[in-house]
Image: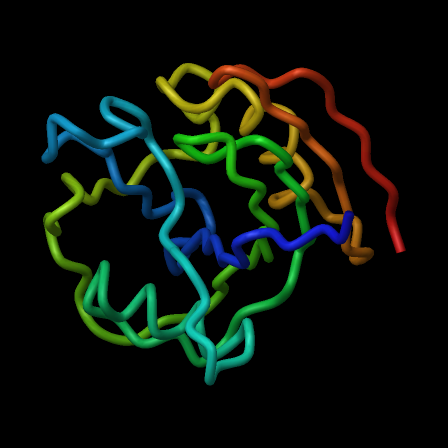
Length: 162
């Protein structure tokens, strides 16, 4: 059976001094699958856009900023991640330059600048703790991972670099 995941983007916006990252604290909707968790900015790709355009659109919609400089840090296949077990394929970007002033909140929750060293202590998807160090490390190679989920829990994690 062919793999037909939902294609999405996830962007991590660095502060100008590169010591903080802009995250959304998903605390606005009681029916949110991500309620209470911190996450990067992003969402589903639209049919007529590439992953860079989709990342920029999502970050503009969610944070009110423009992202002229971003780099692909990796991809992750999340079989079974969706609310009803849907498969997702994510393109993970690091935004190293932006223009504008970020919103303080959006319909999903509060936007917060979080020091990079605080990331491990935040409530987030357990799987995020596995790939976030790869987003912010100094290795110029992209990572490409597979992280299956079952019943809302990560089952395993593996990745390669290219």
